[in-house]
Each structure stands twice: as C-alpha cells, then as structure tokens.
Length: 445
Image (cartoon, rainbow, N blue to C red; front, side, top):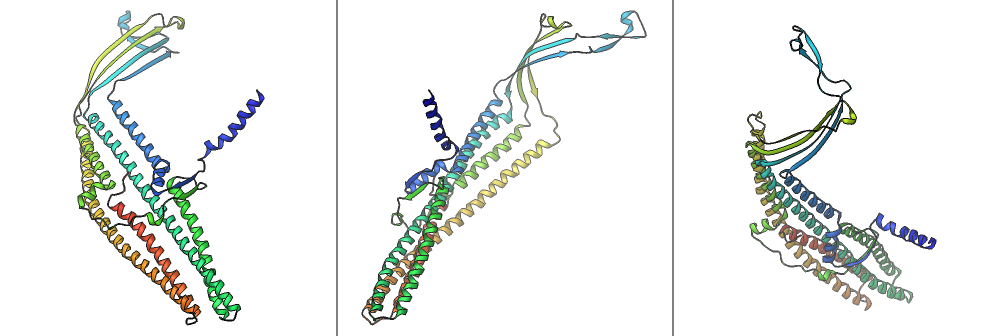
C-alpha cells in the first residue's frame, strides 16, 4: 500500500504543473492552421465566447420575469412586552376614562406561500425581443473579434515569412561573398591584387554577418509575436509550413458599395444596434400602458402565550386576486426617456451613413495602396534581378583583369540595397493584401 501511495503522490506532483499553466507545445502550422488554432486559443476570442454565454443567460433571465414567481416565508416573534392599547372606559363601566388593555399573545409564528404570474406587461414583451437582439449582438461581437484575430495572425505570419526570405537572401549573399573573399585572398597571396581589395570584401562580409544576426533576432521576435497572436505560450516551438511563393497576389477586386457594406461585420453590428435602439423606443412607449398580474398567497398563523403550545392551534389565511397597475402621472420622466431613446436611434442612423462613407474611403485607399504595392514589388523585383546581373558581369570583368575591385564592391552594395528594397516592398505588399481583404469584407468568421 505504501508503494502505491508513493506512486500516486509522485504522479500527482508531475500532473499539477499542467493544471497551473498552459503546457508548451511543438507545432508546424500553415497559415490556415495557425488561424484555426487562434480561433480556439486566443484570449480575446475566449472572452468573447464567454460574453456570448452571458448574453444567453441574460435572455433566460429576461424570460424568467414572465414565468410564475413563487416564494415561501416563515416568521417567529417573541413579544417581551405585549403591545398595550387604551380603550374608552365606557366599555368597562368607567365612563370618562381610558383603560389599558393588552392585545395579542407573547408568542407569534407564521408560515406562508406566495405566488404571482404576470399576465400582461408591454415592456416585458418588448424586453423579450430586445434580449434576443442583444444575444445576436454578442454573437456578432465574437465574429468581429475572430476577424480581428485572423487579421493579426495573418500579418504576424507574413512577417515571419518575410524574415525567412530575408535570411535566405543574406545566406545566399554570404555564400557568394565568402567565395569571392577566399578567391581574392588567394590572388593577394600570389600578388595579383592589392590588400585593399581584400579589405573591401571583408568589410562587406562583416556587415552581412552583423545584418544576419539582426535578422535572426528579428525573426525570433516575429515568431514570438505570432505565438502571442495565436494564443500559444512563448515557450512553445513553432515552425511554418507555408513559403512566400505560396502566397497568391491577385489583382485588386472592385465591388459595388452595397456588397461591401453587407460583407463588413462593423456595418452588421451597427444595424443590430439600430434594432436595439428601435426596440428601446418601443419599450418606453409600452411604459404608458397598464400592466396586469395575478397573485395568490396562503399562510398559517400560530399564537399562544405558552411556547410549548405555540403550534397546537393553526389559523389559516388564503387569498387570490388580480393586480392592475395603470400609470397616470410620472413627472414627465417616461416622456423624456422616450424622447432620448428616439434621439439615440437617430444617432445610429447618422452613424450608419458615416460608416458607409468610412467603408468607401477604406476600400478606395486599400485598393490604391494594393495596386501601388504591386507595381512597387514588380519594380523592386526587376531592380534586384538587374543588380544580380550587374554583379555577375562585374565579377567576370574583375576575374579577367579588366575591372576593379571597387566596381565589384559597389555592385555587391547595390545588390544588397536592391534586396532590402525588395524585402520591404514584399512585406508592404503582403500587409496591403490583408488590409484590402479586410476592407472588402473577405475575411469571415
């Protein structure tokens, strides 16, 4: 038995840290898999789903107002001093005086049951509709959070891809530069070139090594940012399946205004808010109507001067009835509440018009930026290819003795600059693609 207990305690010790914090994992995700993971692990989405459950409970709570209400009560009283009343002395043959008389007994107890049922209340009926609309609003809020998470994960994923691409270009440059440096050092030893030729290439090589270290650190930072956006622990190991070549860069889409509005979650949210405001107006109008409720109660009273015999005699009471409440004067409060509700609804109409203009502007800006980014990326791609060709020709001339090392160094520097411009244009292009998809409402939940 001792051995079993030790094994149990040892196993419990190993298991407890897993309950205390999320366990680090190892994963290899494509972009879509990363988005899917984030949809079930990202804190903002988890909290949005909790808000959905709160909204569902709120709906059930509102429904419960119209269901039968039943309550029980019990009481016990010990009159240390029984209440005394003064009665005219005429009753006792003492006219013109008042005689003190004690009414009641020392011990009193009661047990009762009360029930009520709402039969008609206009504000309750409107509140039911509003609670369901509120639930719809919470679901759409979760959708908006999912879309925002998808955008954040996609941008972070693209940042890692761009950093990987930049690192690959630097590694290719280093490999080529190391060979050139080795060949030039050999030529220097044989007296065919000057030391300055070696020094120039050494400077380029050292700069590339430093740049590579910076990119590696930036890559690690981007990976951690991606983990954060996905809801993974920073200690987890994450690798990417996708490559830059897998990303499809299409021509910008052009949609009619109405189509864009209907696809944007923000517009849908505001339409739902408008429905809530309209229901709010109806609710305040319904407060001017009467309400009707049925009620009933039954109770048993016990009285005695002797505590032991308190519950020997029971005096029951039962009553049922209807309660009609008709509002007459409320100091104008309901009227002004109704006016304010109408004004809030008018504000929502204005916000819808403004949101349409905002969406139109966002789409126009996103499309323009996307098209400009396409042209810039194509141009930087051509410049990088030209820089590679210039470096290739320059090295051939240098190897044949008809070119200088300065020309080679300048060509290497130009290629590195062209590659950096290409990387920046590539990153901008990918981010612009995400922004355009978001503006057009193409990112769904």
